[in-house]
Amino acid sequence: MKTTIKIGPLVLFMFLILGCSSDPTYEKTYGFSNGQWAQNVKPSFTVEIQNTTKEYDFTLTLRTTTEYKYSNLWIYMSTTTPDGQKAREPFEIKITNPDGTWAGKKTGTVVENSIYFRKRKLPQTGKYIFQIEQGITNSIVDEVLDIGLLIEVVVAP
Image (cartoon, rainbow, N blue to C red; front, side):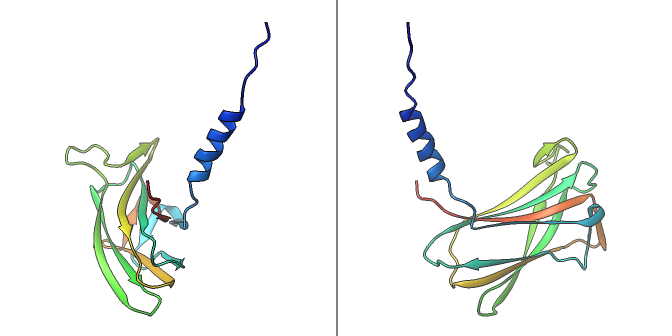
């Protein structure tokens, strides 16, 4: 007995699934040398925004090692708009929960923590600059691997 497998519907389904996903508008990671984030190191991300009618999801991701000795990390994010306006905001990134367990996703000796900014509209087209600085009293924070920014267009359901 001969069996035939119809792959047409499967190929169409895969095409639709892959066609619905969109590439990020922006994705970049800044790696810290020797796992140390010095106060004078301020990673900067320059993003070109072409459409002010769309909403964007922003994800800021920090990766540390399991040897990181604090329960959190305060950062400042400075934003410069295309017309030169500036704003600076503090954010706390929780590294551990109150009971000492990892707040983020742990893989081996790496812990990944993210801050999400959902459905944000940007008022102007052009280049936005997002600069991140560590905000603790130590001049160097050890066991910090990298920090990344991901910006994606919100896709309507």
